[in-house]
Amino acid sequence: MSKTRVRFAPSPTGFFHIGSARTALFNWLYARHTGGTFVLRIEDTDRERNNEEYLNVIKDGMKWLGLDWDEGPDVGGNYGPYFQSERDDIYKKFLEILRQKGRAYDKDGAVFFKVSGRKQVLHDAVYGDVERLEEKDFPIFRSNGTPVFHFVNVVDDICMEITNVIRGQDHLTNTNKHIELFKAFDAPLPQFAHIPLILKTDGHGKMSKRDRGALIEEYRQKNFLPDAVRNYLCLLGWNPKNDREIMDISEIVELFDFPGIVKSNARFDERKMAHFNTEHIRALPPEKFAELARAAIKSESDIDVGSDGGYIAKVFALCQPKAANMESFPSMVRFFFSDEFPYDAAAREKVFRKGDPLARLAELNEILPAVEDFSRDAIYAAIADAAAKRGLKTTEYFPILRYAVSGMAGGPDLMPALETLGKDRVLKRIASVPQAAE
Image (cartoon, rainbow, N blue to C red; front, side, top):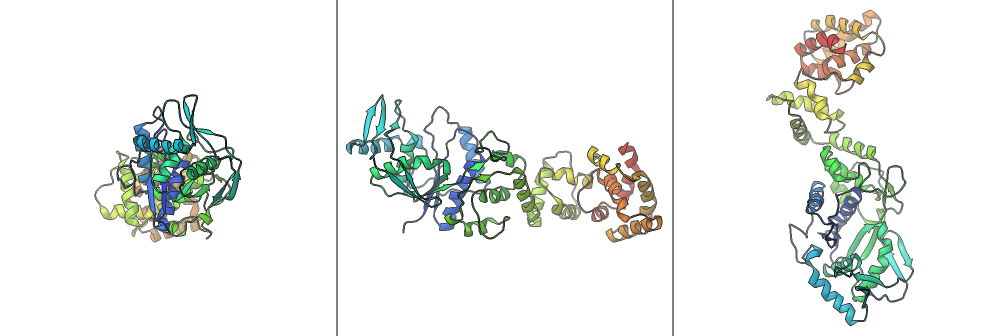
């Protein structure tokens, strides 16, 4: 049995979007699952629309997602060139083969392929046997002398000995043409696996590059974890059949195979993508989280975390379980490193909406100075004792206390946060918050 060889063949005519990334990912997963070869091939025959910037965006996006290719641009291989624009001589040789067989002819300045006139049956790994009506003759070279997608696609798959073609379900209509060409060249057919489309969030229509959340670059800019994006994309059209969603890439590679690919189209959900990102952030090893946290904070030039490694580690450990994403992380931890932090307007409205927060704040100004051992347990005990004496619930003190020390209505657990900040900082902030809250 020949070794698995799969390929991802993007056109550098636009940014790297969710659909293309998912196709690349499924090919990469199958190559890694089978111990095969993942080829990156650039379909740049559309010379008017090709753009070097788009090519770099595609390659950078693949690298960011961890989709390393075994053959292709930058790494080479034995089946190159890997740019279709550099394979003209190969295409001319294959065209001559068709001419000699009487399967190619000139018409209106273009070159057409003469079909066999027989129905073709596609044995698809996902959709099963798909019978297509016989094709009409179709062009394989344009009048300007450039080859057409169907022709170069098949020729390259033959030359590069591609064993499995994994691509979007929208290519099913092309496959009859491709089977005709494979057979005309007396070449073995690869195994086809057509994967379901990714639909817009509302389920109406295929997701396009113009839709919100469609571009991989958006997630890079928002500091999403590539592991999270990759994990979510895996589940857009594939079911691991183990009732789990959050998975490590090594586990996904082990489980991935064609029987798990579903036929029904997948609906993109940006909120679910964000949820995956949150779960992956919270599951990171502390040292890896600290690395990402420092990078995120560095992007906020006015936050100076200082040089106290123990304090920094304590803050990161406290905040990791509450971190929703790395984009908002600097705002979440700012109050630990600076007394200059904003008082959030929405938080203020929430805190001052009910009860008597300023009365609670005045009482805290009496309660907290008396706490000698400023530990989380001692702070809680002092507040609970004062609340009981006044006939209040302990939690009635928490919203205004959190708002006073952080300017927020949510965030890391309050008592550990107070302990970490220290008594002096906490007392200073609860003494000044009325002015800041007015």
